[in-house]
Each structure stands twice: as C-alpha cells, then as structure tokens.
Image (cartoon, rainbow, N blue to C red; front, top):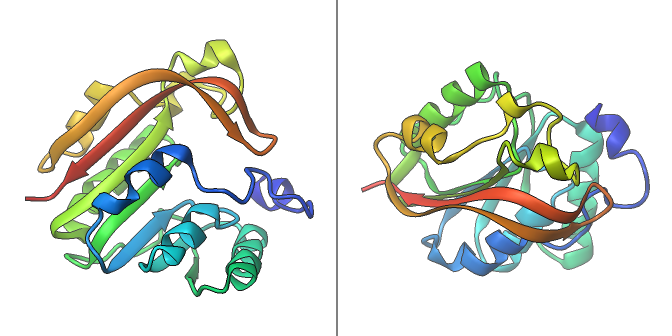
Length: 195
C-alpha cells in the first residue's frame, strides 16, 4: 500500500514538516533523533536542517528513496533504515529524541513499539507524537479507517508508562499536509521525556 501511495512524483504529505513537530522540535536535546514511519522524509529532513543526526525508518523503499532525494535537495544528510517496525531494533538508551507523526499501527504492535521506545530513549530525551483520535473517523480527512488504530490520552498514558508528560492534548485542528491529510482533523499531541 505505502509503495503505491508514494509512487507519484508528488509528495503524498508534502515536503514541509508537520506543524506540531515544527513548533516543538527545539525541546529535543542536540544529538540523535529517530523518526518512525517516516515515509518520504519531510520531518526527518526538517530535523536535519535544525542540526540533529536523524535516522528515518520506514517499510516503504519508495518513500525512503524520496526522503533521500528531499535531503539532497535541501543539502542535508539523513540515515535511511528500510524496515518494518515489528522487526526494527530500536536499541537501548541511544536516542535523544523519537518522533512519531501519524504512525498508526495495529494495537498489539503499537503497544510493543511504544514500550520499546521508552527503553530506547536516553535519560532526558523526548518523544514528540501526533496521531489521530477516534473522533477523526467523523472527519475522514486522513488517517486509519478503523478506531482501534487511533489513539487517545488514556492509551498513551498506559503505553508510555515511565515517561513524564509535558503535553498530552486531544484537539481538533486544520491539517494541510499534501493530498492525504487535508482539512479539519481530530488529533492527540504528546510531548514526554524520560527522567
């Protein structure tokens, strides 16, 4: 599905970073940042432009080729990892920041990944996450077609046990990210750090 979505010359979600990430990226300490389900690279490239050492992981080789192309256009370097998240080694105590922007997974896998993220972070590191909530199914302006793949505050509090939450808000906002995220959306935004 994702190779097909990214097969156009156009960038499916645009070339600009996610608004939530752009507004809050500066909270992440200098160093290594991991971008989950990074697709065509818009967020990874933006973070590299801010001076971070960025690793972009995605299951779509087509998307990652476009991510590399975007990085070259912008004159920055990002590390590319072609992997399914269920097989990707997040490591332990190695990331200064982890970015999860609209990374919607089946609940059993999502719980595993979120748990592993906590141990993969260095002490003092941050997770920035934006995802659709169940209310997004009313808008149909992007995101997964089923409620169980969305997220809410209670879900994230449980799955990121061990982190301190700076921000955890469910809200509705205008999202204009290419052709697949366009219009009013119901989202949850999370900033959390590892003490």
